[in-house]
Image 1 (cartoon, rainbow, N blue to C red):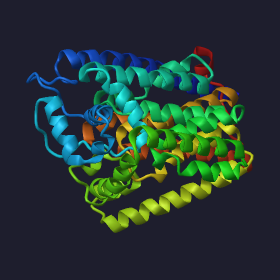
Image 2: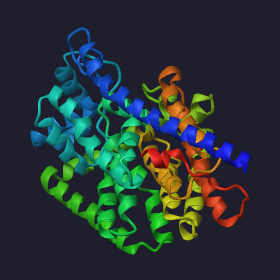
Image 3: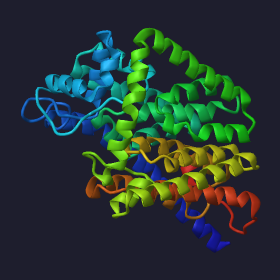
Length: 408
């Protein structure tokens, strides 16, 4: 009894420490952007001209769409020429637009504002639904701190990426699926602007017999395609399909101007370690197949829904070869579902340390610029797998109630 009491105390102390770290990271990231702005390290550089980042392709594509020539947004030469004019400087490589035409509605809405205000507004506007979804998943106010404390928040905001929106849509789909299947399907359909993140959903939805979700998602995709076709024209879709293989070849097969260490997939890690393109694709394909099979088994089984949802969020990241640090906002969704599971039934041994290590690896990226995000994803996958395994294989270890539940 004394030993169990000691284990419970130490576990609770670690949980309390993890909660405080989330709050501290949230506060640090909240103040980081203003500090970067005033030090001329965000949006506007020390030379007085804008810093080239991913957001420039979004805003420029939106500007092009507003002129009525949406197809030109997919032409790398036209895009770069306008980006250089906007930034007031030239830069190496390309910030190319490769999203499906429906996402031009978001780009055009942002382009209605001047570049700098639009850049500042986008992280705030897209973070709000993400934070709301995280709060809904965790089921406690701690969800706000967890949303703001994930170390990827700053990276996403700095480059003006859409990681918040992607994570919000995936999280909303999963949190609504058990009770609001039509709304869940609509959220999933809206995610089609990043189709590589929706590949596993049909498999698990079929395995779980969620036909209403599938139909709602398909209808949403169809409606968006038709509306975008009417607004932006057939030329935009033709240009998107024509330039898509160019983007894939540049970013993956040839690497383009990218450093493999910036990408966080199995394929990228293989290339980072010196593996060939063929080996990279072989390992990525293997990882994708294993992940898909595991998820279908998980979703057909009797594991708690929180574990199924966490598994799918992790699996999305493991199955795609094209993933950057800001895309790991999706990992926050998996962690949120695991936190909810722990608050409901107690945290098992090593679960909180593994989740803490995953967060630490995301922070480590800033120092090493390596695929450490893949390792973080695998650590979270281990927690999911152990939770799922316990459903079928009885173990003597008992979950320990945590001070985290009392503190949040």
